[in-house]
Length: 512
Image (cartoon, rainbow, N blue to C red; front, top):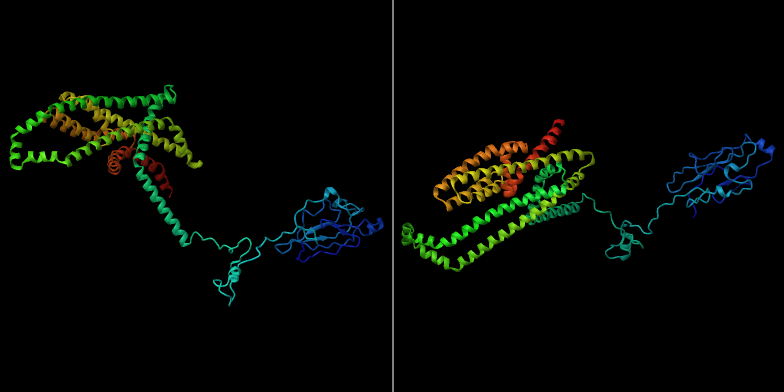
């Protein structure tokens, strides 16, 4: 292509000199020896460049040399040459890759570099291809593009690449529309996540409880591994013990419940007769018509429907409880068997430079959770043993089953002992006398105070390393937020938070 860049060659080629196909000046044949000697020190040297082109210089210093010129034009690079004549006694062009005849040696021919300047042979950097049409600013008096199609295309810069005109600059992040749209998407996403978490609350609770149990049972698995058992066998052993415990608990309740139901069915006529012979009830019946109202209520459609709905609800709750228990046990088994891989996965989410410290803190938190579960089982065992001894001395029926109920409910911090005490006192009253009810109530009130403020804080201080006041407050807050599950998770969560505050927050505060 023709080059419009002005050339600044040092001189025109001397007679007898030509240019090669690549634009390099070809020296004339060497003159006779006397002329060469005469021109040895007088060869004119003229340089019109500021930088030498390393790709155009010869390998030796005796031949003719050419240097590239740095042009101010950003799209074209010129080249200038220095006419040094012949130097040395021979003055041949072999060092420049040119034969005496003026032809280039084949091995010295450079690889094509793209477009070159036809005058100097230097590589030419072509400007970026520009579209044939560019958007133009409207001139004064120009027609309105809403009415004139040609003016519309001219101002939009329509060409074959953009048939509808050049697109404008994209909207920046600070644009009000972009900011508002992004903020709205964030709010919608957060709302959908909260709604999804609310709908899946029961599943999330089962996962959390299963993971909690797996972490709590892991110390027992590690102890079995110290005796030489592989992890699979240790997990199977611990899980089998847990299954046997639940099976024994359910089996201990079957006999008392079945006996009580049978006894209630046989004693219903006697209970009705006693109610009819009761003077107080007879006096109330004369005054308020209690029996007539009770009969109308029982024979009404609403009572039958309500009774059916209540029975159905109780059945659904029982089936749902059984399903959740089985699901939690299965999840616990899976989490317990793959707990090392789960820990490694979460540790690898931390940056490499902090992964070791994160792993140490994580192991300590998991150890404290395991200690909490062990301490909770210890407290439940103490409560169950004390209840069995007390009920056996008092002579209450089904002492073993009631003691197991107290032990299971006592796994729930603070409020578990109260639930077990209410169940035991009610059964003692129904199977015994009012004196049994009073004695049971007094015993469990005293025992609960001893457990809450003496046994529980001391055990948790030793296994979880949490202050007694923090233990009580955490259990109360957890129970208020998530009920039984919150009470179970509150103390290990408080232990983890206290560890992070002591090991991370406080040292950082000392450096500020």
